[in-house]
Length: 216
Image (cartoon, rainbow, N blue to C red; front, side):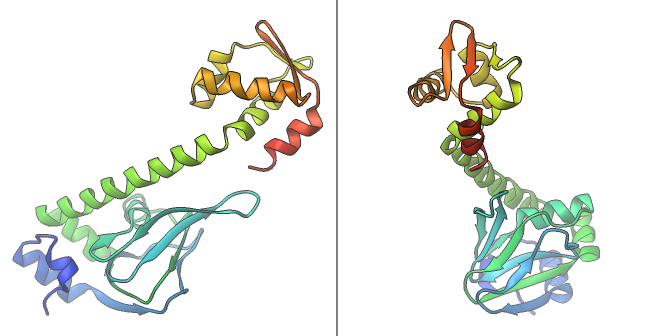
C-alpha cells in the first residue's frame, strides 16, 4: 500500500514508507467530531491526509483560544509532545471538516523514530513548524490582554495598598514594553483605578481592578 499524496511529498525513504503503510490505521472522521481532549491518553501519532483539525485550549472564563490547525500532510505538535513525554493531552482537538488521517501506533512511532532518519526529519520539522505557530499565538494573546495582566499584577504585588516598582520593572515582569505599561497606567489613573507617584503606584479602586483582571 502506498502513501496518499500529502504524505508522499514528505520524502520518506522506501523502508519508512512501507512501515508507515503497513502499521498505520486509516481514520475517517466527520466534521465537528472530537479527536482528543484534556486528560485523554495519547496512543498514536496522527498524520492528516485530508481535511483540517483545530487544536485549541480554553481560558478560565470559557473562551476558546485556537492554537493551530493541522492540515493535509501535517502532524499535530501536541500529539508528538504527548507521545515523547508519555503525558496525556492538555488541549482539545476537533475536526473542522471531514478528515482522513493516518494513526500510527505508539510502538511503531517509537521504532521509526529510532530507525529512520527521514521520519525523524519529518517529525521534528513538523514539531518546530507548529511550535512556532503556537508561540506566535501566545504572543498575540498576551499583547492583546496586557491591560488585564497589568491589573492582576498590581493586585498581586501591592503592599500596604501600593506597588513600589518602576514602569520598566513592571514591563519586564509582564514581557512587554515600558511605553505600553506607562500608557495603560495613565489610562488606569484617568479612570480612578490608581494614583501615580514617582516609583509608587497606589491602588485607588481594587474592586474595579479585580473586575478587569478577572476578565482574562
